[in-house]
Length: 396
Ligand SMILES: [Zn+2]
Ligand SMILES: [Zn+2]
Image (cartoon, rainbow, N blue to C red; front, side):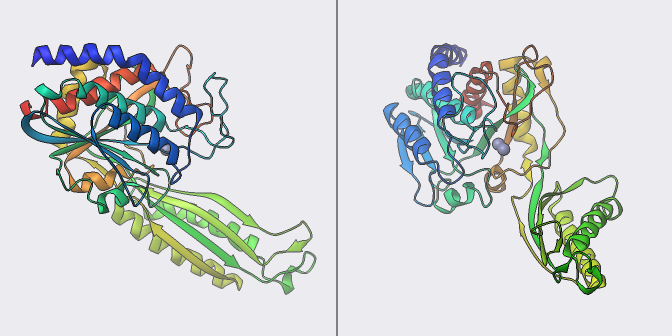
């Protein structure tokens, strides 16, 4: 095995420059969730060129590559997401986005390139590989209902059925470090759309109108108070209204306000009960003011839970690549991630790949920031860990 491991490390070092170029090319031409037509073509052509069995999904732009090892053994799946975000890039990189209003600001270009490179590296040891490597490139992670379920419905994890599944996500801690935790790592998110209806009128006669802006203001403040009173202080949950819209001009009382927001928690049950509490608050406030409301909510991605045994396995593999002192444990986030659907069906784990360059970026720039600029040295680290997760699985 040592010989094989050295072989794969050498191969990854040889591939590094090519994979960095692949990433830069993906970065220049980002595609929004559900529109990853060109990206999926690039991926499927590449996988076919390196000799994998390739399947393109019908439900969405998902691409699946299968590498059958010449020796019998388990099937290990690796997953990457391919979509970008609706943002105007604010970096001055020579390979900055050429698509107005769209940017790879969550590092999914890195995820996709790492997985392509991992497939290329593993394909060179096919004759010595025990078991199969299943590469899942999924679209639309950023936008509910996501791309994972569409692929699962199409049977991408049915034949061969993976024994384990792994994924990585770029994160704004120093390059060279890896974070891996067992259990709940990313929360579940519910999205809500609330409309509050009043009765319009002249600004000088509010007594004859029902002002939905005042009702909405009370609702926002009351719901933020609710979060401090209805959530056990030892649990965690977050409520944010990201959008509020109402009225037409300064001297008119409008007749409707729209609010959109998210509730996130590591505990899906808590998300659901908070939605019920939220509706009671909205009902009480609007009724007392003579307004009415319509509330719609969608329970989004479930909580992402790492299998403890698989998390331990990732930790051991990553320690071989970056050294034990570079394995850190970060706190869970409440962001939402549709890799959770895969983890509900196959034991596995997601780990975080440090992509901050502390010299150039003393204050870390987070994912989803238009200045997000992951350090590309993380790419070969990602490939080495992913490749070893496949190669070592049978012998773990
Ligand atoms: Zn994201
Ligand atoms: Zn992401």
